[in-house]
Length: 424
Image (cartoon, rainbow, N blue to C red; front, side, top):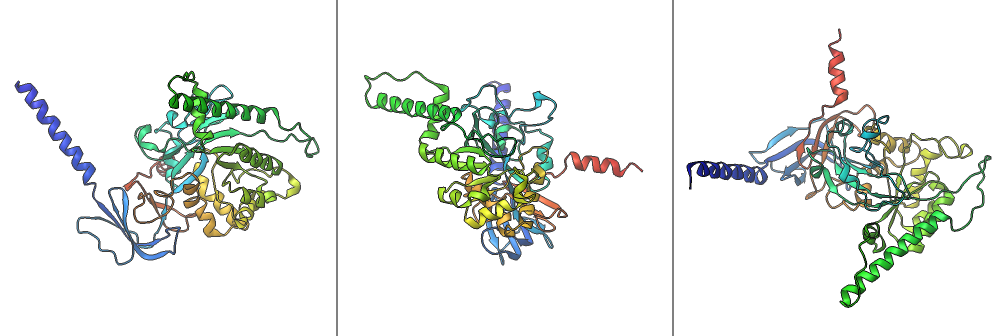
């Protein structure tokens, strides 16, 4: 072995030892004297949260803090689980007037192979802004066409796309055809089923036939294997019931039509929008389909329903027993997620339910409630510390932990604040 090779080998050994030590011993963090709001279960006053290896090691009162732990005194602060945005375009959308900075849409009408997590931009200016307001996880979705592609769930932290991914495939997104309306706002009769619904059913049937041919070829080697079809291949998890369809639907008649479509095709589903869901709350509950509300900054679909119809909608569906989540429907306004929940709470939704709509409920809907959505032992330590109610506009975020690591709260807003503080 030459001297040069020996030196290089020694360096590599030391580097591997340091990397191994960093992974195995990230240290213990203790958050003490906090008012803990676990979301599931009762609040814990003057509580302690121990974080170890990125997870919640212990939570409660009278917990022994290890001597080597980094201690954060949270006296006067509230501890919440990080909030989850039910639908947005964070890390996909930068500047609306520059098409090159928007990666949420693909050409073509049928794109089941498209995955939003493959177009992530970790250095997006909107990510740290949203994160600084307590949003730690986001459901990022595709748009356009009749089948837009697959959405993903990301953590709002990471240097590269792979570090941000929580779940690469959450749902297959379908733009459900809406009922046309006359100028007077009355529903016009339409041909049933519509051409778009027929098209959706045809491609799903093709996927089922494709699946049967593949299975038959596996059982009987003499049968030919069907030629690879990218679109049908990515639709297999949908027709097998492994991947839910995420259907954008808004009016009461469209919601009923979508429920029938899901039942006829025997699909798992999540509804998005459901602006007039309050009119068919019992039907949605009976279907067992969870919903993600669109932006509560939007206008009602029909003025005769009242200016507050969109604000009352979550409370009505919650009382009917429908599982729900809130969304910002944005990238630039993703930071406003908690205020959609608080607006619904101001118009009839129970405040605890509103909090669940940005924490545990979206985690359940997206299938990650074993690791996210509440503060419980064994879950990922994604925690925010605030000086007040997380749903209140006046509340300030003091600390944010994602996967047990405290993240920097500086962003474009704080940079501008510091800049203009020095103006005079």
